[in-house]
Length: 57
Length: 526
Image 1 (tube, rainbow over the protein chains, first blue to last red):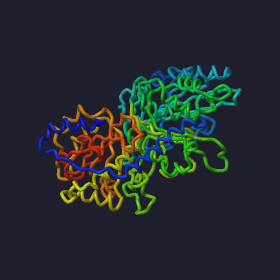
Image 2 (cartoon, chains in turn red, blue; image 1 turned 90 degrees about the vertical axis):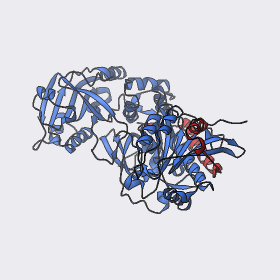
Image 3 (tube, chains in turn orange, purple; image 1 turned 135 degrees about the horizontal axis):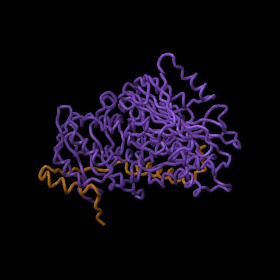
Image 4 (tube, rainbow over the protein chains, first blue to last red; image 1 turned 120 degrees about the horizontal axis):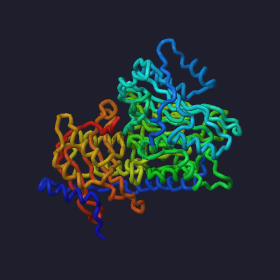
């Protein structure tokens, strides 16, 4: 299923401005698994905070 | 909500606090006890060379939220009695009588403090505390407190305005360190809302999960802190390190949550164990809202300077932050606490406050941005030789892993105004039509991750480009990379957006930019 990204709205608007100055760029996404794993660690730590027993006096 | 600051005085005294005045003697004689937080207020006055202290006695029953506090104290402790209420203000100029205030500009006011004396015999309590205080910050360009708020205060018969960050002291009766820390930060995030402790305690009471009756003097639990933030519709990202996996103190150091919160003008909370032989089990929490920046900080070629997001290293811009600026409710306002002074093993809880409706924290924006940057710069379609700054960025990021990233959330208007105003080193400005066409397409709030180099960022406060992300969308962590958060990358000569999707993922396009080299970093109101 084709997905429309938020950035594509910018592309549509900017393409009207730039016409033939727009250039396609091939970008291969690197380290996707590693950064995904890191971000999931951050989110998991935030979720675990729901079990907090800390009290600040 | 300013009623308690703009009530008229019953009696006003003008005190010359130049040469022969001793604040030590004054505090000892007047308050008959140690009062470190007030000493701090006098020290701040001295640092601005204050000449006059105006001491106003107010009606002890109080008005506005001071009266609310007294009502709450009476409910909690039927033997409560208010004994004193003073408003102290510190002035640059020499003032002798009330009519002098009428001729004095608001710029002469250095700071004010409202202090209360309360007695609760059943609690063996009889003492003064600082209900609130606001003081100017030090005038130094590297003393950075973004997105300031102004407070109105009546002195004599005239209303003055003072910019600063509200300081409040706990009293161990109806407010603990957590209550006052929250009031400091909420007063910046929700300046028009009444921020009484009785409202906080109502919320805390509803969410209290203990077997006994909730008493404010017992402090606030994390779920109560969260409930109060939720009530005021303040977004946040927090971590309890005691509940998280043990290595999170290293993987996700607390500075990585505090710093983007501060840079974004929202601030953060830090909860920690006190260290030392008399500390016991008590946990303390304090608010942070600014930082000092030392451009000459030695950031060595060592692992200590890098941050690792699991695969790639970079240098976070907070490496040049020497201290965080915060209040300590026991000791007073506007302290600089060295960035690494609170050791990670003592930190148990950190909260990054976020701008309204922002759905994820700065660390996530930064991790995504490093990955985008690596991917872009590694592309064979990127001709690094076409621009010397692009080549330098390529070497720093890919070969040396010494790119500097600085992360902050800003409004769309702030970012577009910044982009339209900056000039590169040759004086070029961006094409105004680009800015205009993006106005309607960008979301209200953005994460901006600025890209720089170690020799460019600290001394010159300039950057090579930035990655812009949608801060109002929730990160979809079922995917490794949520490309829906990505909006654009701006690098020297060109900027990039997503055109569509192919079988490998998103496809990108680029456009020419007028900015060919480095530009100033984005600074929010100081």
